[in-house]
Length: 189
Image (cartoon, rainbow, N blue to C red; front, top):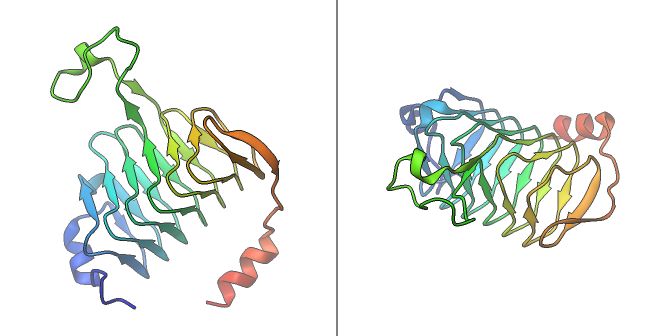
């Protein structure tokens, strides 16, 4: 199972701020400024995931899966809580160009000319994000949020609900994952 993943000595050489145990990171994943990236235990990061932490911190807690082709922009702080799952192609932005026409856009100009939109992104425990979903700056997903495929998240989402759409809308309540369920799953590993 570890054939396409970096071994522990190669993971240490990347220079993460923190690196937990039982971490599987694809040989094809990319990290920009890893000294600002903390990775907990029991984390799997798949092929072609890109994690950037130029100014802000990216904190990935425990029992996390980050699918192939995910893009995590930690220009501001990005926090991913325990037991979260990011499906393939999820994009999380803590910084975005301003599209209203009042500024120049693109990263080849200084920020005083581009005036990007910035904001921390926080995913609480047990969030699951469907493939192709985009999360914009300044968003908080409360505990247990579930988001369907190809959704656009530009506002805070309330705990233990299922959302989907462009922009996301609440679809229904989600069943609560209890501490008892967590404990049983962790002890079976």
